[in-house]
Amino acid sequence: MPLTLNKHAWLRSAATCVLAGLAGWIVSLTGLPLGWMMGAMLAVAAASLLKLPAEQPTALMPYVRASVGTMLGASVTAGLLLSFPEWWTSLVFLLIALLLSGSINFLLLSKLLRFQKPTAVLCAAPGGIAEMILLSEQAGADQAKVAIVHALRIALSILILPLLIAWFMHVDVQRSAAGATPSLSLIDTGWFLACIAAGVAADRWTRLPARVIVVPLIVSAALHISGVTHFVVPEWVTNIVQVFIGINVGGRFLGISARQLSHVVGAAFLVISVQIAIAFSAAILVARNSDLDPLALMLAYAPGGLAEMSLIAIAMGREVAFVGLHHLFRVMVSLALGPLLLSRLKRPADKVDRDN
Image 1 (cartoon, rainbow, N blue to C red):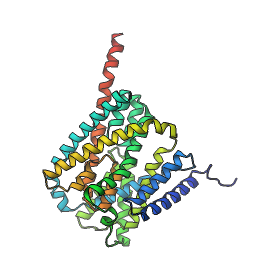
Image 2 (cartoon, helix red, strand yellow):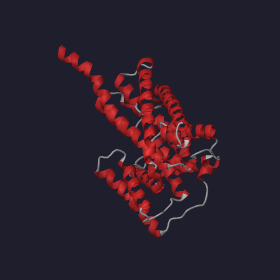
Image 3 (cartoon, rainbow, N blue to C red):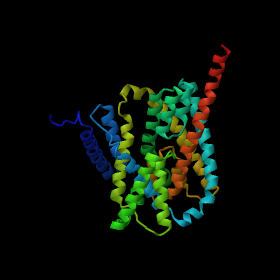
Image 4 (cartoon, helix red, strand yellow):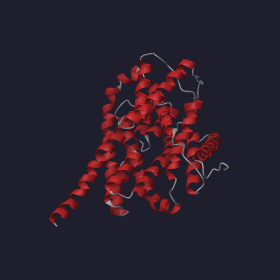
């Protein structure tokens, strides 16, 4: 029987990667920030919504995310670790911003848009997407709404944030990422692959939050700080990673109809507007009262995903470890508070059942 795209997932995955890579290259030529990631994301999202035979290369995604963690770790220096105590103020303000934006979005979704309360809680929580979808299944929330809102949150963050930051801060993302093109020696390539392998192994055999990114980050940082290696990831590798992250975000719309999307897109715009407004306000407030970089703070407080915002930080040449730590903190706060809030919402119903 001849091979067809409709019957063989690996062919669909290959075709999707080619489409995404081509779209990413075309958008990168326009000079838009993160063109490789934006182009890939838009192409795969469009293919998904048009019911074209798109397929995520799911087997490769752990390696891609581990690559992001490795690049994060490569940016960590001893001097950066020494400044860690200065970050506590920023983390406290981030917590306040998360609680404020989450509360406002919960009220808007539940009161204004009439979302069921469990659904409103999980849509208002600032990630991570996989964990919120899992919680929605356990809590009896509308899983489709939760998935679409968070997919749009990340997609809109990728599209909007670099443009907003470039406008407010007068930063040229492409130019910030430019410079001498590094190359990997054979030994450095081995260390790079070892860090990725550590992340993939952790993803399979541990239950740490964001483990596929955090573990290679720690390993890579330890190798760099100890002087074992000083590899810098070449730009072409970063571009490939951008393409696959774009595929991953765009692929979130697989199986979602245009009708489903139209019913939730307003809620997603509402959620991300509140999140961005509060995040930027908090970042500006902290920057004015500290010596922290305003641009790094905006990226750290932004409502995008850990991998996506880290790639933007890499492209802008900011303190990637600072940004990554804040997004890991955001995910952990969401994982801690989400089940707690859902359990509190269930209590009145449980009490009624017992009384009856």
